[in-house]
Image 1 (tube, rainbow, N blue to C red):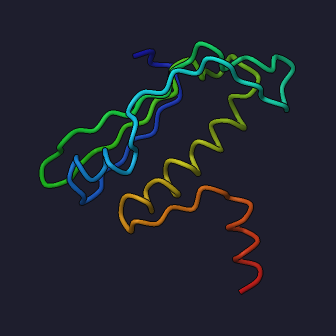
Image 2: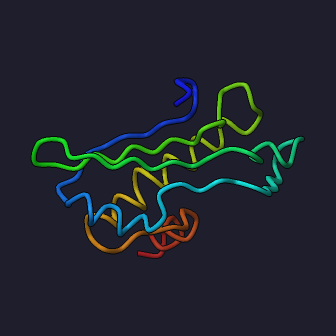
Image 3: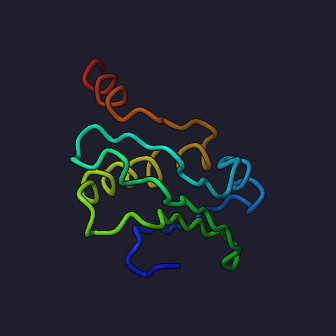
Length: 114
């Protein structure tokens, strides 16, 4: 994989099968994207979202890579931040507790209401 592509990795106590089941689909190829906040609305086209799952001792490592999301493209900063939330928080919670939180804005709104 391209060393410059955006990558996140962490380990959890769940089995590789449990991690896989939470992800449900290991490689996503982006055919037609439309990102509203950048000049090139299709800059994700032809990129791949890859999940790799490996046993690491008693734990399972999940490695996420968005192949083609590199610092040279306009959306890198915002997109990397969004992926950070979705992978490190929402998906991790889905894997470890069975309940994810896929909409960061709604999560912030609920937190303020408490």
